[in-house]
Image (cartoon, rainbow, N blue to C red; front, side, top):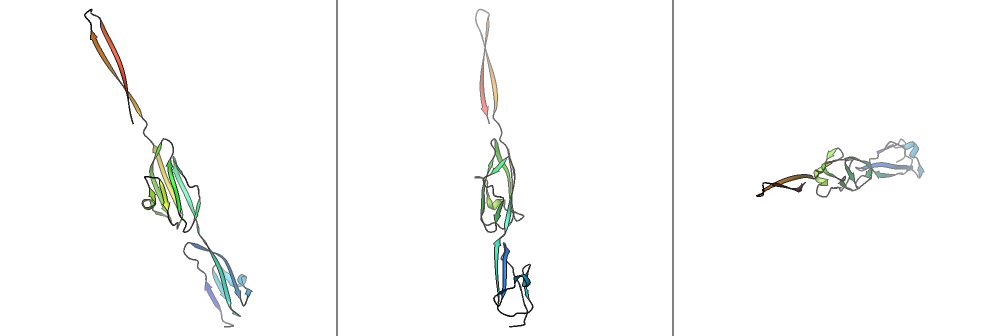
Length: 171
């Protein structure tokens, strides 16, 4: 169709960014004059047009806002569609009190966090991940001492006092 014009818009699939693009017409590379910002525009078609494009998965950030808590996964980014798993652990002397997991600005804590194991498992990432966790100090053991006093009287008008102490612990 010589002399006709040709226009196309290249749109990558959800979760992907357009990578390299090459446009040829009649076997000649015309990318620099025919392609710009996802659009192919040729005003005078003189042969077969071949468009070759690649797409790469989007990369999302992983942000940890952890207080007295650590994460087993140190990754700071993850690709679209990939899974992400980590285990949260409270620092020594602390227990995990609050956890919030957000993906793509939506709270998903209840569907991805197991509070019994501390595991966060996101099967298919589709946005930035923000993990917030706070651990609080575990109550420490307290000890109390109870004193018992026993008094006995002998016939020789002397009084003897005995004191014993017992210690009990509670958590």
